[in-house]
Length: 303
Image (cartoon, rainbow, N blue to C red; front, side, top):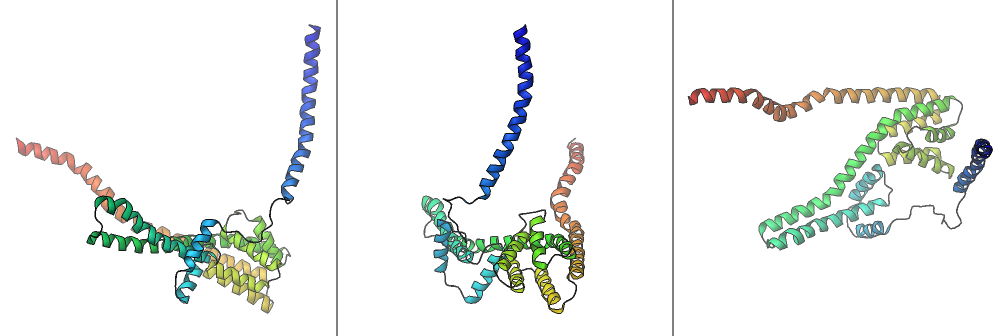
């Protein structure tokens, strides 16, 4: 009995002491582990640019072989940057167009035409041409859709970013410091506008003039509201007017524009619902309502 009391007393005292000591010691371990993550690894190579993967390099080499006019290349370059890719990605995009234009007809030839013995028929030639054209146009459609979604996301996040930027400027920060603080404290870190602002701050830190860095932001986003914002900031700095009041007025106008777009989409909902109601809901409703009457009338005339 005495041994049981001694053991229980020892456990009741040692267990809380061990928990406290473990928590204190683990704080130092967690601090050292976080510090080790911040320190650069000796075996990790330092790279200033993203190294393309092998398949990206192959597609880029294939895309460089495609002969396009300078105007078309400029349009593809604008579409690529608006979709969130860098300028080097335009050749990967061109290579994907050539690859799909060759893969789709080849897949049809191997898996459908040859097993069925339709090689050389008019239907085979027509299908091959359609698949080749579709494979050439599909990357353009996908990239255009991606660019449109990215522009829409940037437009909807622009008023909130401008509000935070306005607060930083009115608090006494410079424009460069306000851009850095806005990019660090925005609620959505993966927002495309925040990524572009991070690029602007890096360019300014590297020695690029602020006006040119902001103009590069407008060229990369391909959004009229961003172009107007850049023009407003450049003119405000040139003429020496108050930047905070100007930013607040512009953010309010963008918020009104965003609300008007939402109201317009809500007003179009009734028209868009007309076709599903006409071709899907109303026929089923008519069948449910008229089927019992039809069977009753049929039973009357049968007798």
